[in-house]
Image (tube, rainbow over the protein chains, first blue to last red):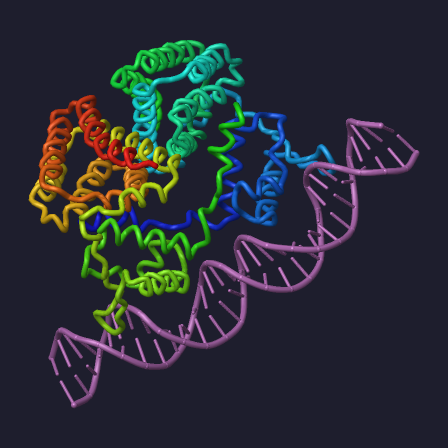
Length: 240
Length: 240
DNA sequence: CTTCTACGGTATGAAAAAATACCAATGAAG
DNA sequence: CTTCATTGGTATTTTTTCATACCGTAGAAG
């Protein structure tokens, strides 16, 4: 086995210290809208358990997000850490800056990764026999995006994409899909949400769902690829 | 966004402490044959840097692997940690035990994950224009497996599969692919390596490479799916 | 047979993170 | 308006992890 493959396995065990990783994780949960505007995060004690870190470390992370203006922390019963962040105005002025802030290599890496994961997930879901509840869930998420208020579009779009991976029943795949999306969230948020684009994306979403429900793996994969390629090409175009 | 999606993002930040994670990583590098029998790991100082941990922590991990009989550590110049582990005799007696040691849900999860990642990677590689060096690499890995000594079969098979993800140029995808394979290594090692199976797998590997070189994403993906499905079905069959 | 050097082995103090226990505030329920 | 459960806030101790410096060994090169 060549040395190149050593890199895949002897890569860093830790992406950073516990504090940094926790800030990242929470920030992404907020930016992705997993916890929507105005809602509160789970209590510190619960969160610490779920994240596998101590409450002290979690609190440091929460405090830094509070100081950065993402959270409003209130104490007392019915208190908690409330999300006080709305995705930036979908005007998309600083896309070029955002793209170039991430390295060109990193961008290509993230886009390829996302493409592989999401295509694979859709493909697998298309080979699976879905029960009525699963079909309903998929269709529900589809209509949620299609009828989304522009301010809520990204959040529901994310939910739709994640649903595909989740419905495969593989937590690993779902986590990978979420991770892949996270790596391009900031960039996506900088892209204006325009009417024609929404309509176009809506048609592609419909195509993805149709292929999945029809049990057409190749079609589902191709539909996802087409859908993602549009965004990917746009982002690549902004590279300096 | 539903609560189910909270799980994807608010999952543990840390899989364990640095020591445990390091032991896992090294053990897998050994079991996968990334560092073959008789070879030595990089020096402690280099490894510590690459893994992003302190030398002290790394040494603890190495010592536990040494005590477990996986490594032979020698000091002095030209010393180091040498791999003293050979995959178990390909007799495959305890497959059922190995399968049931892992939970049924975990097994399904791992198999689905692997299927999605590897199909996605092959598909992407098939849409990529490979230069001559890349084509040569792919063909080299293919012939390596085909001409493998039975004792070295698993290692070269792993190398072949990883190559596909690596050739996409996405480190994230390569890491995910390695991770997916790691989750079923023990099970694969418990499957006897028999002549007919090797021949069959060889044909499938050939089909995968052909489809990739022909620029046929659907074909590549399907070929990978068929290849993996055989193993997956076998493993699922051993569930209690 | 000496030397040089790349390796593992060891010691120590600082920093990060975790575990634990307890304090304080809030606001709905009664 | 009192009670009380739930939440964030704080302090203390222990464990883990890291950073740094230095020691001991082996083996090739001269």
